[in-house]
Length: 221
Length: 240
Image 1 (cartoon, each protein chain N blue to C red):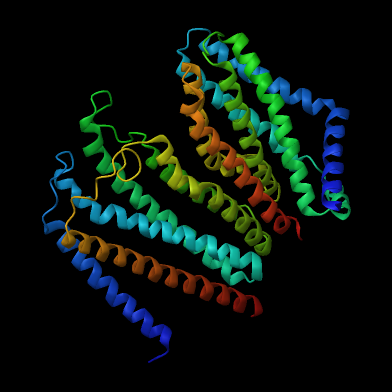
Image 2 (cartoon, one colour):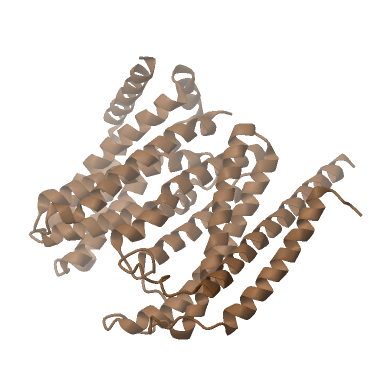
């Protein structure tokens, strides 16, 4: 099973690289902390729960764009060429998607903890449900942004392009995520937000499948 | 005079467009409209124009995706030109459909809810949101295309984005309003909007749909031929 061997080797490489060059990881954490700090400074502790929820999702969206953006841009062309000689494109994109999902899981938890500390806790009636919705949402963002960052890395003016290309695709997940997590904040039963949760999971699967089909076309020169 | 099947088809297309549009505009503005829904009143006529415009927009969107798939499979630039022109038309018809929808929603949806602004131009219905998302997506596609100098690279990358974005947005276009509800007919709680229409009103509607679809195909045909002629001219100039 060379595909799985390649994928796991690439995944290991991504994780090791991240661990070795800690500046990127610290940069992302600091980005999310400063973003949460700036927003919380403006709103402090007197937000109604629904507004708190929406602001949290907006923060999460920007943090995820910043975190995933570098997944293809950071690599120098020589390094990419070397990788492409070693592994197939499908293994590369699957490894990147899994890595970005893991990264975003961590970063969304950290962002949530910061935001809870700085701008009011005790608003969420059903924290477990809220957490599950946020984690699935952040995975959807990660899967989504991986291929878009590969697309944007091919063009000039990468930062603007990444935002312009990814925001429309992130809109559905934003709507569904905000709707489900606001139900969790009110403490409604799981069944009420089940359609949104299933929808988000399907969204991740669709995005990942389409990315795997399309990435080989981007990679061929 | 050229008598190939293409030119005959183009003439037939033109006649169909003229006939459909004159009938749909005349009948759509003069026919009796259903009053089963007091909220709609005379604005129900917009059904003959707003809905067909979205038929045209979605047709062009799907066409663009199909052409992008064809380009990635065959690597022939003529498919990329077609995908680009179809995306432009999706943007055009989408904006027109959005504009007719905004005007309609302002009159009908604003009035029946006490908690919203009765004169709201944008009532944030899920259907409207997904429509604007679609339009934004194709605007992003245009920006992406303009950031390449190399034609092949541009065709390949924008084709990938076109397919990726359509695969992640189009299903949601139908599913999202159903999941979240909303006031747009035939999506959320209201499934009765089309019940009160008589067969003559449906015939006006389908004539308008036929007209818009033929018009979009005709414009696409013209734009593709214009673009191809322009490229051939440029190639000639380079040789000279």
